[in-house]
Amino acid sequence: MAPIAVGDVIPDGTVSYFDEQDQMQTVSVHSLAKGKKVIIFAVPGAFTPTCSMKHVPGFIEKADELKSKGVDEILCISVNDPFVMKAWAKTYPENKHVKFLADGAGKYTHALGLELDLSDKGLGVRSRRYALLVDDLEVKVANIESGGEFTVSGADEIVNAL
Image 1 (cartoon, rainbow, N blue to C red):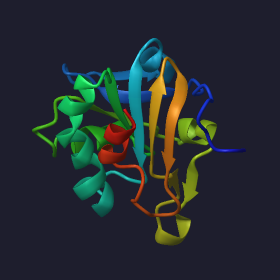
Image 2: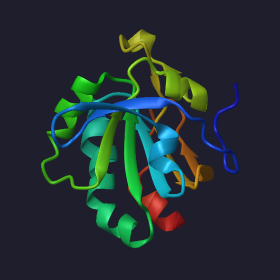
Image 3: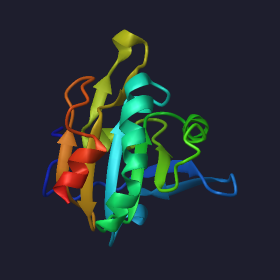
Image 4: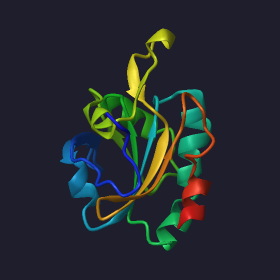
């Protein structure tokens, strides 16, 4: 299966998160993105070093600037369960705009064609690191990393693309 690319419509699928009332919600990706300009970025794993110290903080720090450039939603997806994503989100008390979404079984990641097999590192099948700029479900920018790299999918690259 070819990975998602510029010009593609993102597939629909379900992800889960805990809302402000601490209730788990399961929603369709299309319900979060239809008619909106959204950033969907993914990390191989919650609490992992590059994800926790660079990738996520970059989007939190640039969130106001991204919003000022017309971005409606900033969505962080990881192949982790919703409880892990909730705990990870709490480690960023300054976060106001990034929504942490769980793709627990990796089905949405599979639909995007962006799986990364990290079984040799004891992590199983996860997501490649990426950042997509999506406008009304159509991919406008697809910054997809190779392996464990972090060179093209950061917040700065999306800011520059807007």
